[in-house]
Image 1 (cartoon, rainbow, N blue to C red):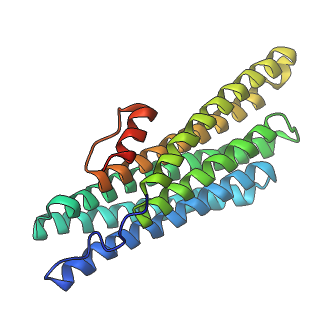
Image 2 (image 1 turned 90 degrees about the vertical axis):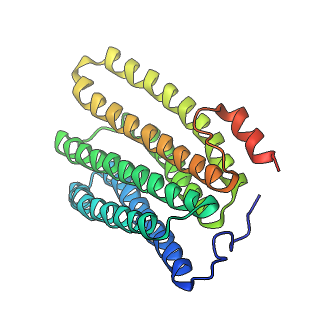
Amino acid sequence: MKQDATLHSHHISRQFNSDLEEIKNNMLEMGGMVEKQLTDAIEAIISADSGLGQLVRDDDASINAMEVKIDEECNRILVRRQPAASDLRLVLSIIKTVNDLERIGDESAKIARLAIELTEDGDSSKGYIEIRHIGERVRNMVYMALDAFARYDVDAALAVAKEDVNVDMEYSTAMREMITYMIEDPRCITRVLNVVWVLRSLERVGDHAKNIAEHVIYMVKGTDVRHLGLSGLEEQVKSE
């Protein structure tokens, strides 16, 4: 269900409209930066590119700076404009989404650090297929969640929440496979543990993407859906 794109654009003050649009655009810009950071971190693992891994780690400072900047803009709007109803939900959802984006950036930086360590440890393909598959799923979840926010699309947000279930299942399967590797060859335990931490970070990225999807539903529907479960999310999305 795509909502009217002008949902938050009916104010006497054109400056207020402009302020709201600016913080939304800044949040989406930060989202694009985080998407690239995540994509590059996964590529650094798969390609054994420690140089790319270091670039990802260096980019984390820019993500953190964006978070601070957007939070300050949101706080200024809350104080000066005292928004209500859908406008207030928009600002609060942006604040929450920016926090989740920053956390995704942190997980990407962790993956990049592990990419460097794995590259230094030498060649091994154990776990890389799982990293590629889960990495592609969660990267797509982040994209879908941000796109849902941009379009106020609660159906797209619900699709992100449903995808998180698939990611969790694939993650559990991958964990069992990693344990099997370590039992069969104790010499690879250190390396496989690094792969485990990568997979754990990817699973957490999926959780944050799901959080963003829930923020979209809250923003559009006006209901806090964080603890309703998938069936509760579906009920809220279908409600008028």
